Amino acid sequence: MVTLDRLTLFLMLTYTSNLLLLGVLGRRFIKGRPDITEVEPERWPAVTVIVPATGQDDGQDECLAALVNQDYPDYRLIFVTQDQADLATRIIEPGIKDQPRARLVHAGPTASSCQKNHNLLAGLKALDESTEVIVFCDMTRKAPREWLKNLVRPVANNQSQAASGYYFTYVRSSGVATWGRALTALVLHLLQAMPWFTQTWGGNTAIRRRTFEDLDVAGYWSRQIVDDVSLAALLLRAGIKVIYAPQADLTASLENCRLSDWIAWLVRQWIYLKFYFPITWLAAGLYVYLLAVVMSLSLIWTLAAPWGWVDPVFGWMALAFLASGGLLACLSLRPIHPRPPSWAKWLLAGLVTVYVGAWCHFLTVLTCKVHWRGITYQADWKGRVKEIIRN
Image 1 (tube, helix red, strand yellow):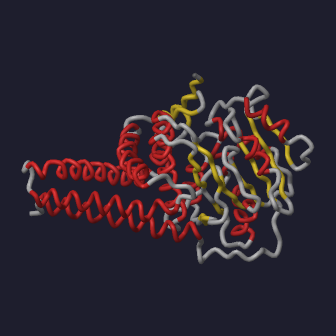
Image 2 (tube, rainbow, N blue to C red; image 1 turned 180 degrees about the vertical axis):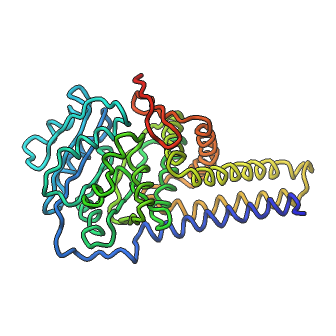
Image 3 (cartoon, helix red, strand yellow; image 1 turned 30 degrees about the vertical axis):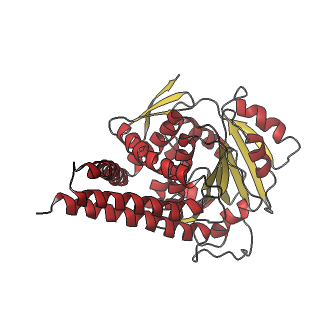
């Protein structure tokens, strides 16, 4: 019979090794993928970048300027907002004035899918016949000048029908919730970089138009609650492998993120996984729950051992796990971030992230509702929108 101390020791060693493995492999793939060639293609395909936008966020004007100044020989930009009253329209219209490659499209309010999907579908209807590769990008992340080339290169070189990047979060405040969200995004970035977990991310994806149309993604999106995770599930069923483009990462600024903002964002990440990859959602949730339990026991045993309330063996095991796990988390994850905080703040953010991650997963267990930009979407268990409530 497996005793509690042996089981606990096994879990501690497992999680410690996982942290190290995540950092080592993630850092390797983020810096470069040996299977992704960086040679120039014989011909750069004609590209159209569809940029759905809504609301007014800091830095949107800089992100727009970066998109219209890409070093790519043949590309067009289609910005899509809901209507003329959308705050994003006020930024886009002057930003694309005198830019012949860019245009603005109004999608109107959605009636059967999430608003972002509805905007994307309006952008797709505006494609011209010359477009060979479709790129989806958000206007809340800044793109380096070579971003579009780096993203499209694997597709242009026929290494894959679809390629995707991710983003780094530059934090401009010292709040624990702000750094916790940045750390969560970094973990997702590391997973995105690993070939076993790479999937399309809606803010940074290129896909060959013929593949997109053969799969009837537009028809599929017309009922779905999210764009990227639903597309990832569709590509997986079709046996199409998505490649991570390591040089095509974007950057985002994050300032004064409240705990409620972080929770709302992370709940959406979990629930999208629940709709389209339920087994992964369940397994990842159990992993985070167990990690939260092991960390809680470790903290309790570490504090209780000197008083003789628990066996000293448990105390030493717990202390070793906290020290090694925390140290390895810092050594393996912190250097990956372009602008990491202090070691103490990084450790605190990591500790809080475990519990927030477990709590957010729990919040998705008994619901199929998604709240985003003042709209509540009621979906079925496959992510199909059933009701739209405008708050």
